[in-house]
Length: 148
Image (cartoon, rainbow, N blue to C red; front, side, top):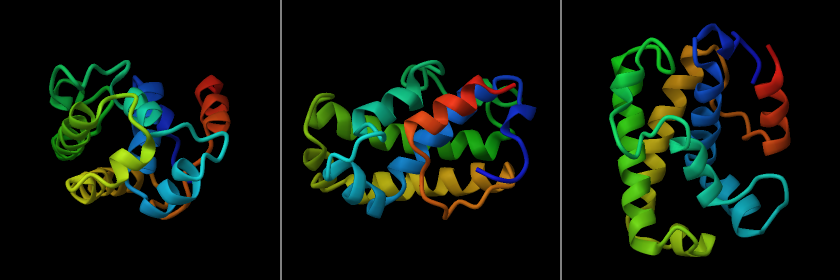
């Protein structure tokens, strides 16, 4: 994640978690190569959903609540809300502990990936990062979250 620091936002750690989740949820090749293959260090779909909604409670209220703290503007918030709704709808249908394949084979998964991609691209661009770089591991994310 080169470019402008994410920590210019007041709640930058939450932003970093949301960005990490959206990045993984938006990349079908990553999902096949890491999640479906069980590659260590990247978690799974449930881990990504947890990072998306854990601190932010985006499963309970709109990202609009966090404009200026986690999200830079209403456009970011709207795209994040759309992605969260798509992913959570599928999670509730397949079950939180469902195998990765259940998510990837769900008929609505491509739409969830598209929504996550739109949000990921905007947030990455607004942070000065290349949205097409591969997702970082959870270990790298943990190191970034400890940084000041």
